[in-house]
Amino acid sequence: MEYRKLKDLGLVSLAKQGDRSAFSELVKRYEKKVYALALRIMQNPEDASDVLQDTFIQVFKKIKDFKEKSRFSTWLYRIAYNECLMRKRKKQIPTVSIDEPLVLASGEELKQEIVDWSSNPLATIENKELKNKLEEAISKLPGEYRDVVVLKDIEGLSHKEIADMLKISIPNVKTRLHRARMFLRKELSDYFKGLGFRYGV
Image (spheres, rainbow, N blue to C red):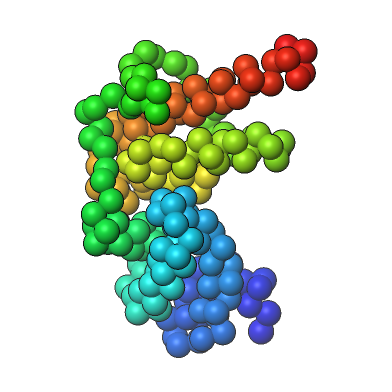
């Protein structure tokens, strides 16, 4: 059987029946994405590797409980995100209240309204240098804001999927996403200003 040609739900169905090759194909299909998600949230390669391993251990144990009412990727990311949260709690990594203004390293508070600069920043940026700069900016975001940007703008989850995953309301998801994009816009605006002389802007 050519497992690579099967869709996720077909592989899940076989994995539920004990087909280890089908499960291995799911791991191959998503291990890089899960690792990238964990790395962006945990900001540490060692922690990300641990999250990756623990995530697929949990998936292996719980795959028979997957109801197939949502995408397999959404269910998988929920498990990965929960593993990140548990590891954060153990390390007591601080989070930021959604009610507080987003404070930049310079001490500036982002309160002003700024129109969303993109609905999907990473997907629309092809320039490697600029993409690296955006990744760097995302890493500077407080955890609660970074998580939403990663899940929405990088992994492509819906507002509802993110709300269910983070156990917050959809309006809170949109608020965090808006504040995060405000920060990213500010970071990239400064970057472009720095390139003004170089590109004759």
